[in-house]
Amino acid sequence: MFESLQDRLDKAFKVFKGEHKISEINIAEAIKEIRRALVDADVNYKIAKEFTQKVKDKAIGQEVIKSVRPYDMMVKIVYDELIDLMGRDKAEINLTGSPAVILLSGLQGSGKTTFAAKLANFLKKKKNRKPLLVACDVYRPAAIEQLKVLGEQIDVPVYSEEENKDPVQIAKNAIKYAKENGFDTVIIDTAGRLAIDQQMMDEISRIKKAINPSETLFVVDAMTGQDAVNTAKEFNDVLDFDGVVLTKLDGDTRGGAALTIKYVVNKPIKFVGTGEKVDAIDYFYPDRMAERILGMGDIKTLVEKAQEQIDEEEARRLHKRILRDQFDFEDFLKQIRQIKKMGSLKELISMVPGLGKQVRDLDIDDDSLKHVEAIVLSMTPEERRNPAILNGSRKKRIAMGSGTSVQEVNQLIKQFYEMKKMMKLATGGGMRQAMKVAKTSSSMPAIHKKKKKKKKKRR
Image 1 (tube, rainbow, N blue to C red):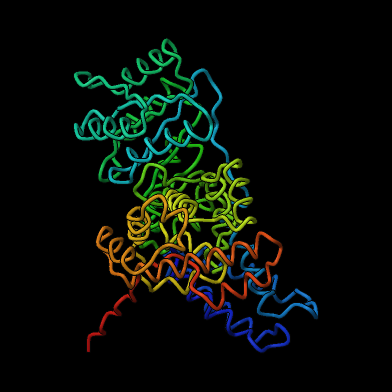
Image 2 (image 1 turned 120 degrees about the vertical axis):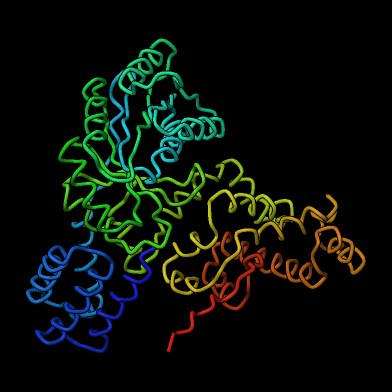
């Protein structure tokens, strides 16, 4: 995400490395590079110019504190301006009404139908809502079927009228059905087109007027860059929507839409889609996005993901076992499964400050932990509880049962003991010793990775 932009901004900030103050000369060189970086990220030139002018004005008028390097000062100024550009505060979704009605709009292929299911799952799990999905795309039969399949995956019912070709009436009937059956949230998936046309705009306008939704969201593919911003403006002129949803933000996006859509339509980005799974959705946090763009990691999101998977009672139990030196492969297996639930390994590692660039060029296999899990599951309950009994013949049997080699089994056992030692030191208060162990050992489970092959330049 935003890798190219991150590299270009890094290049701009390097101008200040070794400098003792911000001057007209070094700021001019940096501003030029920042503007190029933004334009390359598909940011409109006018917006890029205005952004860099603000950075320049702040930097020149900034008294650099003796304890703060010019490099750090410039990063802070750009960070603040990025947050302002993207909206500064997290925007909540409006769920007023009985039921609350959420209308989704956007072009075909933007990910509306998938997002409808993601939002229903999000509201069900995190807001304790009882959602109803509504299929109002009467032109694409596959859209209704797709919504039903997704609805089954998340155990959320889908309201549809296959024979009815009037989306306005379907939406009204769905809301009536929701009231009669105790649903407190209605999410309406509407039809899209390959391009904006008058018929499409008239239809979505009629639906909005008929149902008076609590929230109207515009769903847009982040990979379309500046085109996404232009499309958002045209939709907003007609619909006056309440917020934007950026899908496919995990793809090869240059970042132009995320950076400037708020500036152009003056409506907040409320949600982002970060993967294909139904739980790959999150609120949009401008400050966290700015941190990722500047290579600072995203420790807040990482902590939140961990908290979602960690049971407090289980955490206390594990804490006691670590202190008593009772941590075994049964506990280890539970930790592995929690990590798997948190999402992509590469994404999780990239959220740790300082590690984003180190894993960028590595293909980290998300199935890596399956190999670890297979080895542990090939052990007998007694072997998992008492790893000390793992001799040569037992390791050979485990390797055969898990489809791995004895070498891989040995590697995992070694890493288990290193991890156990580090956890005890950290839990017992010896964080500095634990960090030393972590630096000198490979305490994470074996991750299958390989360097990405660089494309050969054409002569």
